[in-house]
Each structure stands twice: as structure tokens, then as C-alpha cells.
Image 1 (tube, rainbow, N blue to C red):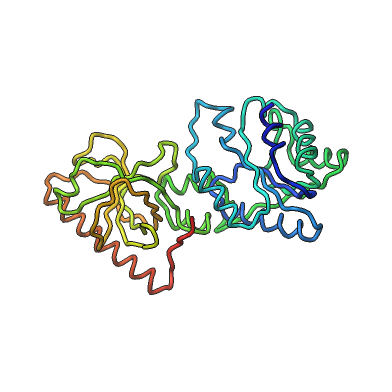
Image 2 (cartoon, rainbow, N blue to C red; image 1 turned 180 degrees about the vertical axis):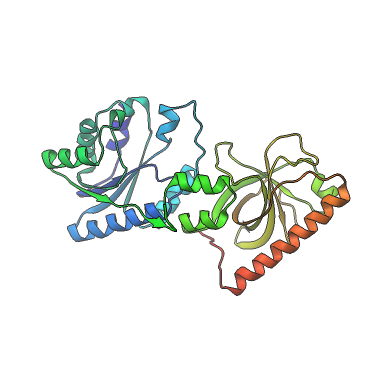
Length: 318
């Protein structure tokens, strides 16, 4: 059984207080749960451990319904490491794992990673058909000899912090709300690939990013963004959409770096999406489009100036 093989590879050598989940986005709700896990682990002299999954369970259980991810496995793992978890275990979520009962899965955790307790969210469930809800897990804990601590949700501006809430905010292009829920700007990674060359023709050369098709994206439109190249940060304006004036209907992510001169082809870029400037629009002439791009850049510069004056500092981690 794959899950048993993966757990057996764990190097845990101490009793563990554990949390389990996908942790997509590593948002403020996740961070609060992790902070409580670490606090309790210190008080009980236990190792703080976390299990995450390579695949979102919905990808296996409901493959017909696509669920875009907020952070890929690489981003997620690094963000979790930054939270100070002592041991992070990554498991493959398979149909075989999904068919295990809560008792069977918990028995494996006790056997291979010396689980002494669980710290879980209020809506957590595991096991076949999600039978292992908080009440069931508490009962199993008493029977099998481990503690269960349920962490209440974090509420911001009347909204429960969740990955679903973040996806909803992204779909509306509400980047302020996204940042409030995540606790940092929303970040995209991508390698620069060849484009149609329209940006050069317009005197605004852009970098086309190769973004994972399963990556969650903000609503189509133009955004003020920070771009990171090596150790340098650049102001930028990014278009996410289908380029209705010249495009072929394919969704693209194009970034124009302000005050940058150089070849970006094949470079890996990171961009933080700060604020939506406008929705996409089809222009009748090239001159109309150029005038609008000039306005977008001016608006972007004003936003960046405002952020700097208010001591907003770009996030460079990862």
C-alpha cells in the first residue's frame, strides 16, 4: 500500500502532535491552526508535524470538476516550512487511501509517525466518505489513545477564511480581499516563453508567462504587479486574459516591466498581483490600445508610489 510505504520513509523519532490537510494557499486560517499546533507541541514536548497531499482529494474523488490550486506543491511546502513546522510529510492522495476508514488511517499514523494528538480545523474530516469528522475523531482518540483539538475558524470582515473564499475573491479580481485572507499578496510563478511579438510592435514589450493550466488566476483584466527577477524587484503591469484586440481566444498572462531593459526569455519570474486596474477591453485601433496602455502604466506607477509611501514592502520569500 503506497500510503504505508510513504509513511514508513518518515524519519520521525519522537512522539508527534499532528495536523492534516491540503493547506492550499497557506492562508491566515492555516497559519493560525499551525501556530496553535506549535504552541501545544512545545507545551507537551512533542514534535510538531504536518501531513499534506500531492493531489487535492477532489482531483481523485471528483475528477470531472476541476478545482484550480492557489499554490502548487513546491510553493505550499516552502510556505509551510516558513511557518516553522518541524516535520512535513507529503503523501500521495490515491483511491486506495480514500477507501481507508478513519480508524485504519489513524492506526497507520500512530504506527509510523508516533502520533499522540491531532490539531484540526472545525470542518475537518478524513476516512472513507469523510466518516472521520470532529466528533468521530474525538471518540476514536479516546479509544485509541490520542488527543484531538479542534481549532475554530478565523473570520475577517465577516467572512470565514478559507481556500474557497480566496478563489471566490480571485474570480472577482478583488486583490485587496485576497491579500486580507491570505496575509500576503497573491503570487504567480512562470517561465518566460515566446509570444506573438505584439508588445514590441506597440512599443511595450511584454513577457509571456507559461502558467500551469491548473493554477487559479484572478479575473481577466489588467493588474498592477511586482515582479521579482533574481534579487531585484520591478514595478510591472500584467494582463491576464484573452487579448480581445489581437488575441486568438487563448488565455495568457503577459507582464510589462516598468524601467527594465533586457532579455527575459526562458527566465523564471515571480509576480505578486497587487491591484486590478481595469477589465479587458477590445480596442478599434492600435493607437487606442497604446493610449490605454500608457494610462495603465501611469495608474500603476501611482499605486506603487502610494504603497511605498505607506511603507508597504514587497514580499520576497520563496
